[in-house]
Length: 71
Image 1 (cartoon, helix red, strand yellow):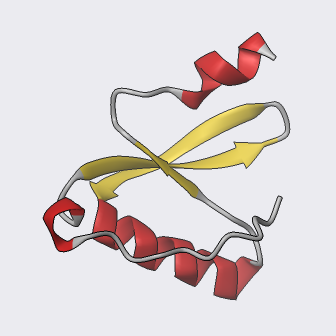
Image 2 (cartoon, helix red, strand yellow):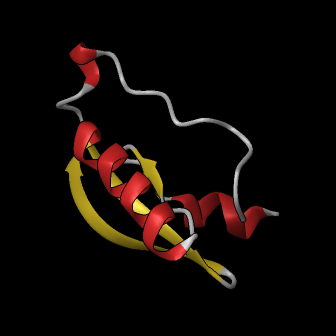
Image 3 (tube, rainbow, N blue to C red):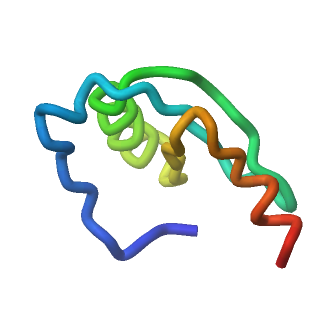
């Protein structure tokens, strides 16, 4: 699922916030990597260029599988 939104760069004060990168696979969110937000943006752009697929960054204390199962 490719988003029409442009990925903006995070404000400098948030660039070192920890996030978890997830990939959506069929019916679940799969965590890939823990990293800083700035690195997550770079990985997002590289993933789009190399595979055409999107990855998503969430705060470490938020599991998107909880919300996905509610729908």
